[in-house]
Length: 155
Image (cartoon, helix red, strand yellow):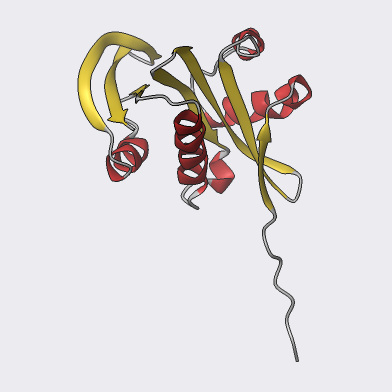
């Protein structure tokens, strides 16, 4: 007897406005305080680099990055649908953003992360990011506001 195993067909491609319906579903499933559709629409402007990760045409996650200064990029959001987290997809998207930034000759990448997002912090440390500061009361939270840890990586 033989078994047929489905092989993933991972694709990273530029985000399209047509993806926003699926992105909003992922955003709402992943975060207690999701971004609005308007925020995502604003990220289609010049200097934003937005990508989606698909497996067999199923949207698994997305990543958004801003390169406003020639030498500096800011990762705004990396999100994987909760059903697909802890499978390495966040690392795949992060590597793609890093490669994209290097191709644009960026010298440094910055990001913010909630202190409660331990999985993301472990990933950022594993990828060579270092904590460079704290933004006080940055994120909305159940009990008011939560700080953001600022991370940076020199490329």
